Length: 162
Image 1 (tube, rainbow, N blue to C red):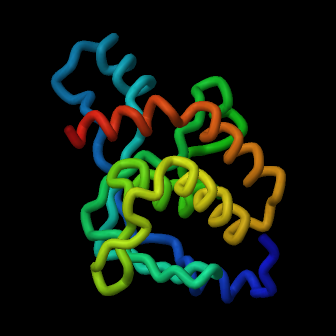
Image 2 (cartoon, one colour; image 1 turned 135 degrees about the vertical axis):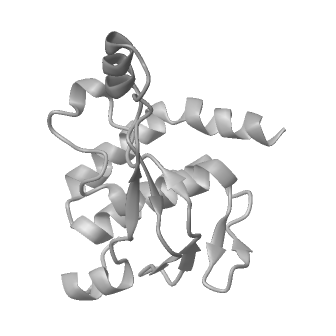
């Protein structure tokens, strides 16, 4: 999806969120358990304050204060070349929220995109990565990864709703 907006305009519409790291639960564990927990548990952050974004497609979204997320789920063997909290971050937050709840919030707090499903949130992730980075190959590769590997996460959250 081509857009004719400058990087400054995009960064104003989809700003970086204010967030804090949630400490990894290594305190009080034995040495090997600490190392295992550190290496195997995903790094998690939470939003500080509501995060408001205005997408080039016209959607005005709000993500609530305290929402916890783990960024882009990069397989351990690819983490040497990409970080969970790098260029995929803004798309990953929207994607994580959509996967967890299967809806989004408008700026006024009302729900939209209700029950749109996995494909919708996968495509929205790709669009946001493309809008915020301009790197077509990155957006396509990341999108292919979540299309191929996102079923387990999507299904896990649907089971939690029961």
